[in-house]
Structures are given as C-alpha cells and as structure tokens.
Length: 99
Picture 1 (cartoon, one colour):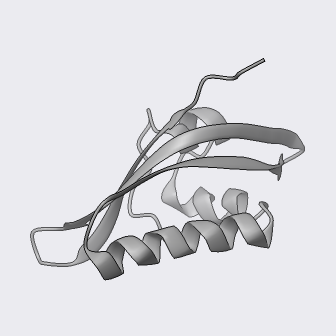
Picture 2 (cartoon, helix red, strand yellow; picture 1 turned 90 degrees about the vertical axis):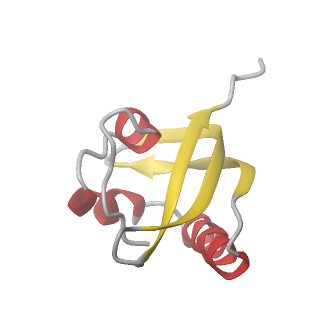
Picture 3 (cartoon, helix red, strand yellow; picture 1 turned 120 degrees about the vertical axis):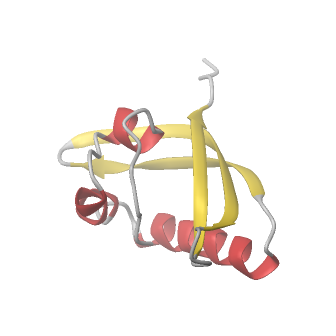
C-alpha cells in the first residue's frame, strides 16, 4: 500500500501518529505480516470488485515502543482521480471498547 495523502484528522494520524505518506511505510511496517497482508488483500478486493467494502478490523502490535491494540471500522472505496488513476479512499473510526 502506498498512501497518496494522510489526513490530519485521519485515524492513522490521530491513533498511530502518522503525519505524512512518507512516514506511513515505516510505522505500518512494524505491524505483523498477517496484519499487513490482510489489509493489502482488502484493498485488492475493493479494486477487483470495484465496490466499496465495510469491515471491522482488530489490530494489535507495537509501533515505536507503543502498544497498539484497538478495533476499528474501515470503509474502503474505489475512486478515480481527474486523470483516471485508480485509488482507494479509506475512512476508519475506532470502535467503542467493551469492558
């Protein structure tokens, strides 16, 4: 996955502290291969089906020494830019904790 833009109010920015597309690979790359592969497959399925996908995801791991363990709802939608290039638009929000 190669992000084009990370929004300042995005879950990646607020939760994991990712401030730029260039920082994305370094931080996300610290998750387990299983988590990365599952995310890649979700993005590929959206592009292949040309339909949006909504799913709940649970992630646990460590990034820069900070324990990450949360569940979030993710919407991935296929979009095209003004030149016709394909992108996936991602919206994610943390799910409430059940304790």
